[in-house]
Image 1 (tube, rainbow, N blue to C red):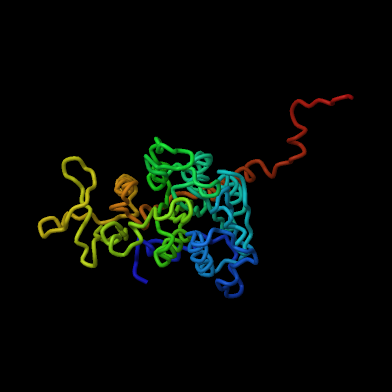
Image 2: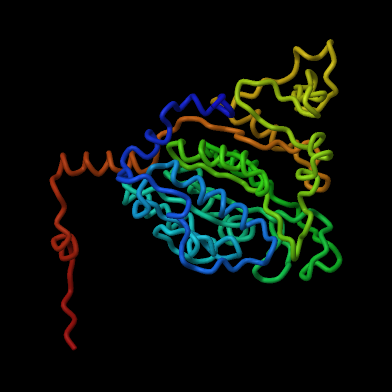
Length: 363
């Protein structure tokens, strides 16, 4: 497979990221990862496509099902653990990253995945999300973004565009929306990507690179809610419109789009330093930005994330924005624990509980 978005940088990345996770003894198939539970999403929901892509990808990990855990919060997307034939937990609204952090840090022999939505992750769960990202816990976070609250029947969400008419904003939303990729980059996430529910090939490739990454990997997945926000991403899915709207980021390659020839490209304005989209000509072709997903600074990745217009979706980058090496939280924590044991010996829990000032309460 040709290198896309820097997949070759990490070489045997899956082994590197999951080096402590026991491997499956027998070859697994997609069928092995399908549970016996009835899938209960609305017919036509984008969640079905994501579920199929994840179930189809899981055998590539070579990890036994009993060493994989899916943790979710609350929302339509958070039914995901029921449908994966792995360990899983349907947890508390917005708290999936916190629960998964404890699991990943204490059980480094597990492959831990978080499934969440734009409401679950970016509203009540926003604080938990950004701290998991900055700590670089060994988690893979799939953030389904449909720009609406689907489970509670169509209220505006933290990613809904300004002016959005919903049941809770009958005169139009006044809130400026979050850009999940920008938010993750601002939190110093070491791996940030965006993909689309209906593009299975691209979605699977991004999953592959996220799994290979040691540390927190956040993938924003544009996911259609055909009941309460149908067609939100049509500009990126209709073939003719997508040629002019989708910017596919590939590490080491010029950022060009617009048909097979790449008639449009991204350059940096010499005066302002901002990124802008231009028609490619012989005069400016050498100025087209080459994507560097491994740049130490997230500055350019952040600028790329700002190209996506929340209203029209014109000039929307997908792919891996950033993939850099940073110390993994669980590894560093284990090193500290080992050092403490070497210096002071194993702790005595009973002595700790009874140590210092104690009182006997007489009834």
